[in-house]
Length: 152
Image (cartoon, rainbow, N blue to C red; front, side):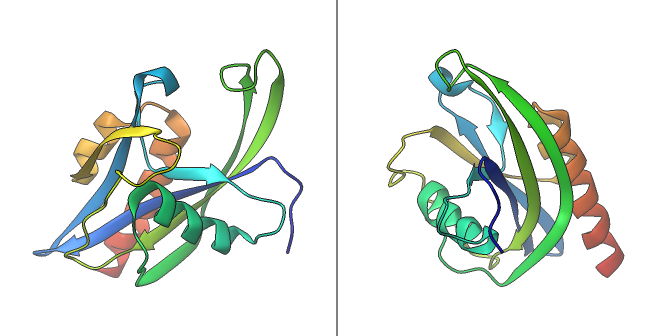
């Protein structure tokens, strides 16, 4: 199924390690806001949301293996006013997913062609909630965490 652009795919990567759940956050470089976020990227016109999810995992974090994808975590819309759009504005639709990776998975942000992140961190739920800037990112994380806690 194809969507009209602009559509964003937001992926909260998590791993289960030593009985705990850890969430992956990436820190944007200062010129792109300097805030912590999950992996997120724009849907290209020739791909599905799952193809976008996998492409963004590879590009932003060097992750090529996913154990499980949890769709439909959260949906929201936001309007961007010129920060990246050179004075224009646009409303984005963002679809949120969870993506489980292996317990030993370590991200590699050094190969990202966009140089958009300068730090990466595995976090507990509480740490991640405190680091995230945007409320909709926090809502998506809370929803995913609730799903994962029910499965324990």
